[in-house]
Image (tube, rainbow, N blue to C red; front, side, top):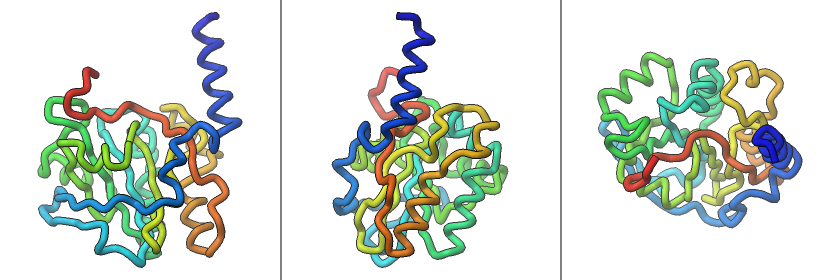
Length: 207
């Protein structure tokens, strides 16, 4: 079977069955608690935000799929839109030292300023502790936690699994849908999808 045919089949599966191919085990369950230090030097504890919606965004500034959403301004627009509505937004960097996407606090602060990013905080997770806690697989990967501390969405940012900036337009944004539906007291229609992007560069990974 030719590689192009295989790629087409994978893409088709992604588009047609997002809720069947995911790690749905986390959706509906309590979000694992964690504490992390951000690039601003402050410590953040998930438990302190019970009663608020929280978004976790796995990030790697060297990943073309992450760059798609930052160079287009898509991720920053989401951050600004939802934090303005009281949502807590944590960008999480689980790249290990020496791996693609690893940054120190100063480098991340410069990046946030350059990109006009607006998360609540960027958590530095070089040991991969938070990433493994949530079984984060790709950058970007998005998780939405509701006011009760339950995971209501886990997966891709949208339904266009490419690194092409042109695919932002017209895409179904799963994060915005999950937040809007859940904040309105509705069930999240698409609660789990396959995340796409670069693999998270955990310590000990060979890539």
